[in-house]
Length: 150
Image (cartoon, rainbow, N blue to C red; front, side, top):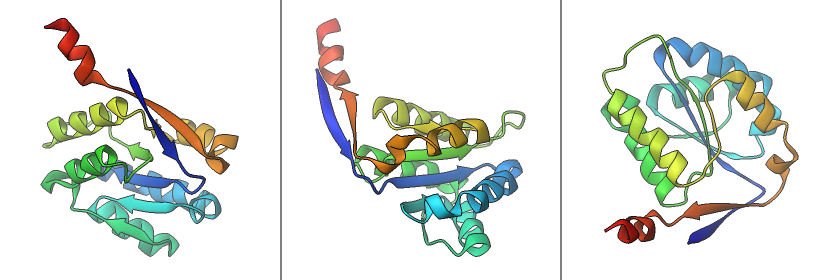
């Protein structure tokens, strides 16, 4: 069983980056400022602040990732308030909040939202015609699947 979740033409996009990737994400946002200006932007604390300062784009900010921002973004995904995530994470640096990061990525998969974790993926997704259209996500009802196993 699947639930259909509709994404509007104007997407609600979370922007997240680990410390060693913040400059990369800001540079990418600057290049894609025109596209991003058509959507609603959200971010974890420092990342959201830096993006807003560097681009003058409005970014709704949550807490910093290590103090719950990743979990806040995850809860917004569950509630349907975030459609999409760009998360430039650092693959070479262990993070003190790695369990939160893993939980956030798991929620993104559970709720079938697009996630770009590097520039190439973000470029491909943001140049897709789907960015300008409504889109229906198919969210698997895992509670029913879990009940079948019992």
